[in-house]
Image (tube, rainbow, N blue to C red; front, top):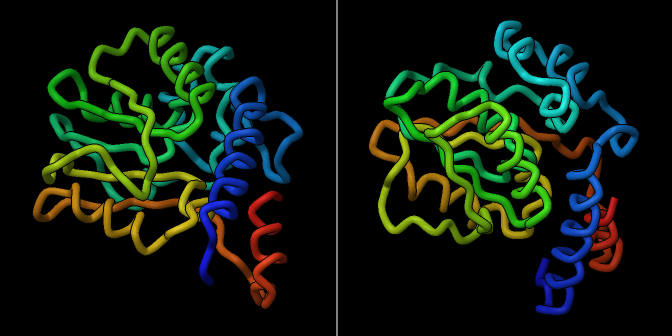
Length: 200
């Protein structure tokens, strides 16, 4: 499906608008559990969930648990694509320890502000955040051992490009660990209906 620049702009503005609200508090904005209940339902490691202050845990709104897909090891470099409020970034930072690094990218400034605040509350020094798109990662070389993402690729307009970017920045032998939603059924045939689908 070909999108005009105007179509892309409408979709991106809609996503930014919705997730600016989510950054304040995701409760009741999704059909699945968020906050600490979401973390527990998705079986995040108990000791990590328990270590999160309520003010941090409340901002979780992931659709899955990318950490069930493989290990993240001490000393590794991790990229969190569409980091949102930084909960998965924090989990990864705990796993890589002080010798590793985690970089979170997101398109929504309010999400990044919340993520930075959450990381400050956790007193983590091995994390940084950048405003960037999954379709245009701001890293010129393969920098990462692991790329994680949670509930983001379904929102990306050019999914093949975003996947190619994730693989481009992975070191040889690196791992891509994505938790996401998938469409069950048929996409609408009309372009207008498909674009409207992004606004849900």
